Image 1 (cartoon, rainbow, N blue to C red):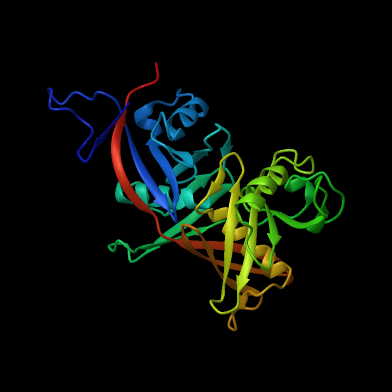
Image 2 (cartoon, helix red, strand yellow; image 1 turned 90 degrees about the vertical axis):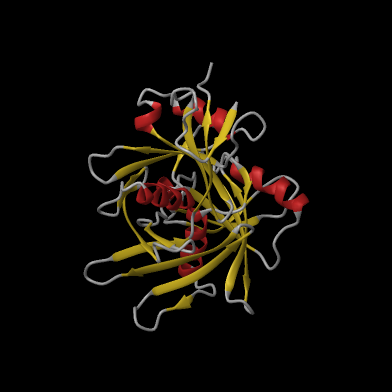
Amino acid sequence: MVLVSRGDHRTALGGVMIGLPFTKMQAVGNDFVVIEEAVWGATTDWTQTAIRLCDRHKGVGGDGLLVVCPSTVADVRMRMFNPDGTEDMCGNGLRCVVRFASERGYLPNGVVETLSGVRAVWITDANSEAQEIHTEMGVPLFRPAELPACVNGENVFNYDLTIDGYKPIPVSTVNTGSTHTVIWVKELPGDELFFDLSPKIEHHPLFPERTSVLWAQYSVARHLWDIRIGERGVGETLGCGTGACAVAVLAARQQKNNVVSASVPNSYHAKIKSKGGTLKVAYTYGHTAVPYESMILAGTAHTVYSGIVQPAG
């Protein structure tokens, strides 16, 4: 049972808390249940909690559970769990945590620990509802062992994936904190093709830990990528931050329609539009005496409501 509240999650009966507080947030339509480890307890079974709370019929409903935890190496630690209980990294979830933590004074240094490493974060127009949250997303991984993918070679670029009933499908895969496989298309797939092929690619033996699947079409008129997302462990989602990074990175590496910065060599800027909204990705890499590489994701995050949920059992 969920009780919606706009206050401090206490009843009128002597101020006694009758459940555990949560906050519902969304970033480009990717919606999350956000809770604090300090309130729920460090011994909580997060896998089962994610399965229960993310259920859209019997729980709060969401594309994932975000747990804000103490950290010894950053201001806070973010843990993200998919609706099936698997732990993962999520760029849109990171922006939600940044806004949640910032509004509570938890981010004095602008540093968040994630499953993929420690990330610097910052906010522009912080006092505006349209504030933009910028997050460092680390370094993309391309080697098959890092994805992981069961194939030889230096990377998985334009790999012909075989699926019964279909011609070989050229796919490209990168790990941007989570494994993403991109299919370049001239037109985004309709429901029949999307819902048939996306799960088959997600569960293909090539990907022992499964993969998210992104279909990407470039719009010359609007100078952006339109994408459709089949997220690992979730299904179709309205947005995906690490997925947006994957599209931008692979487009840059494969020289597909990214806008190149004139002031910074090998700096690529891309807009990625999903059903839930538009994200901006800046990707820079080079091969000087000291190789460098960085991804920065920018977008918004919003609180939808707060509430109380009764403990399991």
